[in-house]
Image (spheres, one colour):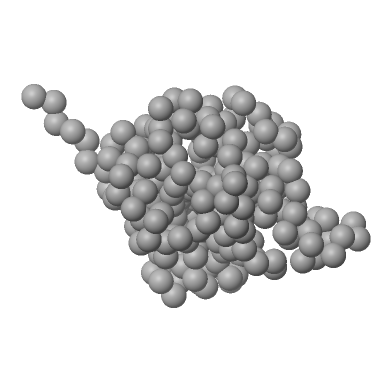
Length: 241
């Protein structure tokens, strides 16, 4: 009789950057990138893990970059939040094409397109086996999608935030530029802030620290890596109190 593999985490929040949907150049929405992410999410859902996703919008529009070009900062941030909803809908489509039931909830209400964010409804979706994607950030300007991830993870009772990146963890310098960069297997919130490692912004770190929410930074672009993280393998960098 085959023994079922037991995941380490019951409920996870996966934080995706918008650029991850954009392929090599980080712009637009590439079908291959969507399919790769959707298949990794299906793998962990098949383990019985409840999956929540917060997605950025940098592949379409980034509010801070817009403000540097003359767009009002609050207006630019709202534009960025709308971009996250576009990405959420694209990911929902990719997931449902491989038979993963999905719901999108947005902090900015647009009932013709997605559900409004309602915590109890989101939890109920998870209990029914649906993947829930949160778009619209926090619904407020001046807050990043990292902060939205920290907030939603605490609200829905996630066990961990899994921050997907293009590198295999947190380094003391940019490993793309410095071949001698040192990777951390484990680091505290305080150490990451002190060394300005830019894992997440200060507001997101503060929320995670206050709520004792661990973060694992890992490379999503390696096949089956999300499954390995969920099973408790030593993948990426653990950021904790």
